[in-house]
Image (cartoon, rainbow, N blue to C red; front, side):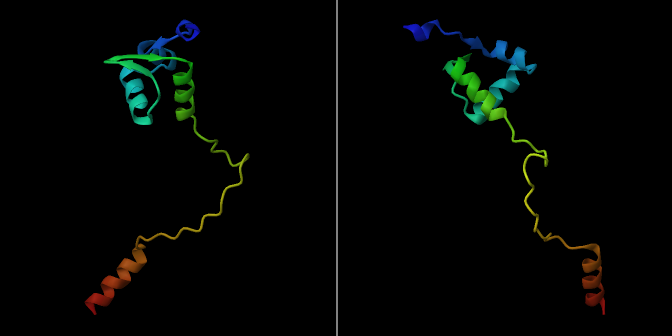
Length: 93
């Protein structure tokens, strides 16, 4: 019964706190499968849902100062202008 006394928030309240539209919040919840309490169109957020939302939105640090960047060894598969020109010239001669 103690679980019933915990605090719940509506989608409108959470969207307002995040400065988002309610529509955007609902889309993110659906796409990232956030475990909200739902009945029809009514959506409620408890502590578990808020934690899951925060974790789903968190991105790793992009700064190179904290993590060494991996060496990039990718080669482009697109043609360079020079190669395309040479191929066209060969076809014409």
